[in-house]
Length: 163
Image (tube, rainbow, N blue to C red; front, side, top):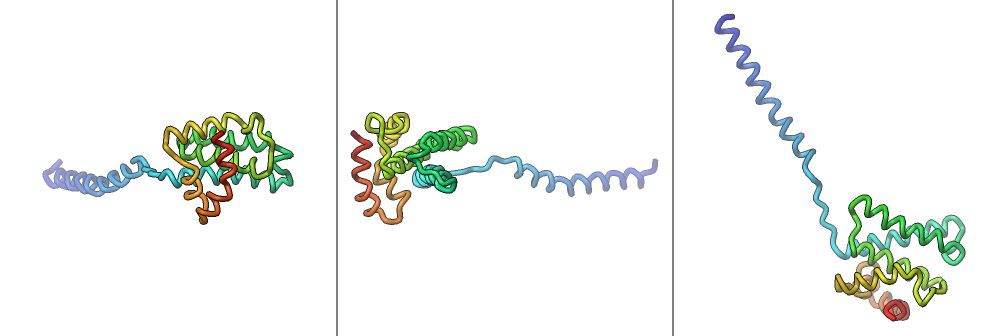
């Protein structure tokens, strides 16, 4: 091989290296983790929406919570399980979910066993209220456009929860 041939191989190799490096650098961005920074309010809202979706499913199927409470309970528990599997479960999400689920039951005058149905939801809400220092006002602020209407209209429910 002559000197020209070595130079051509070197130049070609260098060109490939230079041209492929930016492409490789772009691929590294595809492998970087996605950062998701939810707020406490957005997680409460997300939980509330999940409970509302469970209620909507029953209504669309022509059922009510009073008629098919076990399906509603399964739906709410599935929302927790699904979020745990996706690593998106947070205490504010549970707070919004369980509080909304309990409120849906209360609004339809479903008799609570021992005052609250189901006890696991109630106990979890109370624990989160204490550990995260959340309030029913926080739930109203996150889920209702009319804070005063939410907080005054839901006050009997809130009082029942905290008994």
